[in-house]
Length: 99
Image (cartoon, rainbow, N blue to C red; front, side):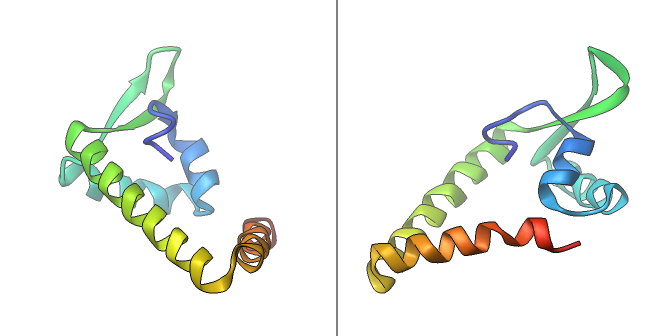
């Protein structure tokens, strides 16, 4: 998500990740410690923190994105494109039903 939307507020990131804000904060703290994410005060609203990938985090995210696409392509080939499309559609409904 941060690869496509750098500067995302922590609250929006928690919502997208379907985790409580406190849980996300712990995860982001670890990513900051590993120099994969940077966290800054939102210049538009000093009460909010925004997050973005560091250059190292961006490089890693791009590698992971390529691997993700390869896995998805393999699944589509193995299941057939119609079954794969149905699977991804059905899985896409889960975030609205969980939590």
